[in-house]
Length: 157
Figure 1 (tube, rainbow, N blue to C red):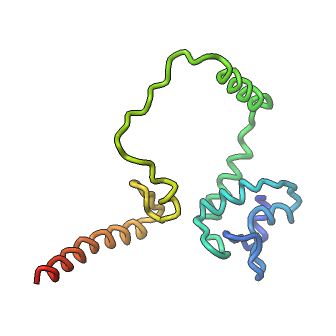
Figure 2 (cartoon, rainbow, N blue to C red; figure 1 turned 30 degrees about the horizontal axis):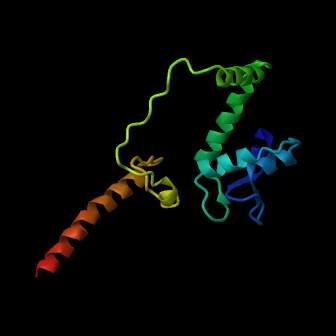
Figure 3 (cartoon, rainbow, N blue to C red; figure 1 turned 180 degrees about the vertical axis):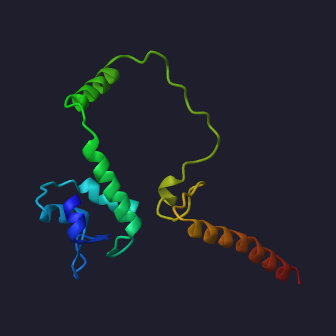
């Protein structure tokens, strides 16, 4: 994939864009890599916040991907690590719980995740990757109370 990043225009949000841009997985494939990790494509698009349609990857996104790929080359996993972790997990599921799990306290709040999941910004804590995005969100939040105060004043008149 590192070779593919160097020689191609990398995009986000699609496999190809019709004007020569390709996703990192296709770049890796064209450079001789034979992999079919669909989870990488989903993660890449989620990391880059790809919306509808393709766009060129930013230099920051490419630098991050390049750094992560290089770091993965230095990681030498124990060949039995995954098998050992799976065996530990199975063993933990089979043995009885050593202590009972505590029940969650009923707060009276209902879980609204299913209905709100598709609405942007619904969570209590929103992560901003750039300062200008955070500043724009603060400015919008500061405008909302002013609008509602103006509406209340108009209703009183």
